[in-house]
Length: 200
Image 1 (cartoon, helix red, strand yellow):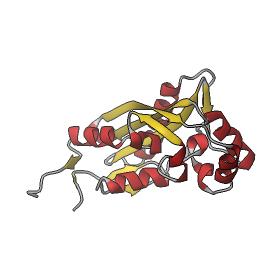
Image 2 (cartoon, one colour):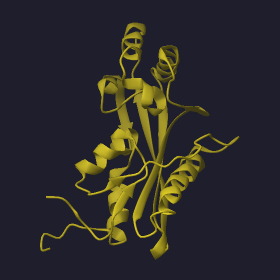
Image 3 (cartoon, helix red, strand yellow):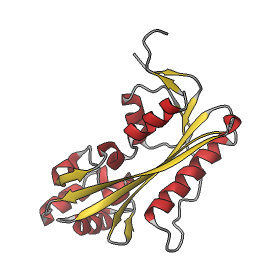
Image 4 (cartoon, one colour):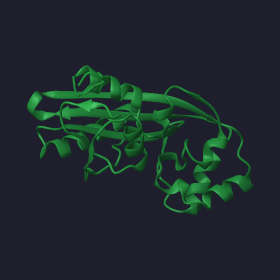
């Protein structure tokens, strides 16, 4: 049984992880990816970067769908002052994994919920800390040879084969995957967008 919704909900992202997470939560929604420039600005702090892009994604779609609730989100992996993006090739994937090996990094996700005709704009950032164990060269080479690293910030999937690299997660697990479900569902309920009542 799904969650009752009071308005059409649109996810402004084609991310398979975000789509799967919202489906697991029981939310009915549509997918309309936002076509925006995701380049970071010079000296932009991680939290400001993900907030800006989440808002731009949500507003891009909401401009054409003012009656709908639009959810935009952006996730980055941050390691000692460097944003680790999506590896473009095997060499980049190996370099990224070597940087993460045996160290702690942070995952920031900004999300923005917008409904233009009701004047709703809720934007927040969720941060999680992830600690990797030491990853051996053969493991790095093996993982970089799989399809998994190449469409993910930081070049790994916490819910996938690289789960064996993760020693600890402090904070939201779903945030590390790409969408902090706890916070998103709380905000949708707060504004009356979803209803958990069985008497409907």
